[in-house]
Length: 381
Image 1 (tube, rainbow, N blue to C red):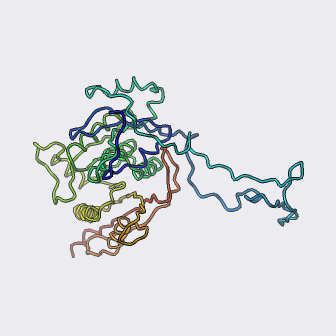
Image 2 (cartoon, one colour; image 1 turned 180 degrees about the vertical axis):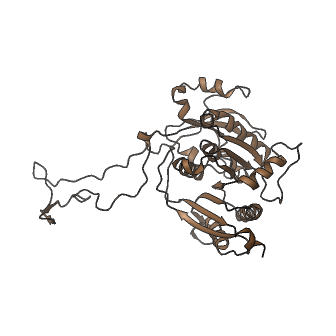
Image 3 (cartoon, rainbow, N blue to C red; image 1 turned 180 degrees about the horizontal axis):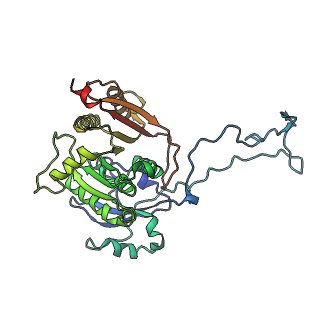
């Protein structure tokens, strides 16, 4: 097989399709026969980082973008001095400066299989064969599949995980020493980035094959976790189930100590790009509320999502039904009053620095949910 074939019933993430200067290396086939690829994402240093802050008003050139007139300040007032001309007397057109893109413009990368590694090859041996191990310490390596059916989209990497990772990396003090739970972690990118700042991260999803891939990604990125001593524990958490699985015979099950740990010590809950099916969205918020009800203290949840536009025959127009349902659930949560917990919902501006190479489009959003428990005496009156 020389190239991945995209079928009509498969979904492909833009992260894989438009990865700048990227290449995809097939490492193995997973348990269900899907090709597994390794993608490398560079973590930007200070000098390379993108500033997404809003420019200050007035921070523009005196000359208009069209270049048809030129102005200058005289006595504190701006005066029109006529059209701008070059040395030959021709109209001088000022070109709009091109937006600076990291290393490259959006290059379409076809997922060509370059080589197949031995499935028994150790991560450190793979790194030596990459040819770029000089920058290895600044590189996030993620195994993933491509062009999956909708039920397997968790095996891909999505832009929402990058937005959440950027936010995490921009708030090192906030997450330092924290215990964190990620819901619907997929390939574990956000959990791995969180563990570079936090003390312990429970990285959860459902599906044995997916969780095995996620666990391998944790191992592949131990070089990022070791300096801070952070830990990632991959565990099964099914939103359709009421309780956490503690059966020792089931892989990725919970121990009783871990269950007690998340309910006693959890500081933050995170989730990235998990809202694409209304039933699963409802299950996510039911799980979130169930977790909140067991916590003896307040908790902060950060959710990143992408507002995806789709043309539907039903409306004969562009709509974003999955996003609209997500917003409806947020609205219900903010108005929910159960006498025990109060909820606060707010959208955060996406103006924090960009630490990873991806296209931060305006449809990417970050939401903050805060829960507050009443004092113990008041809660039991």
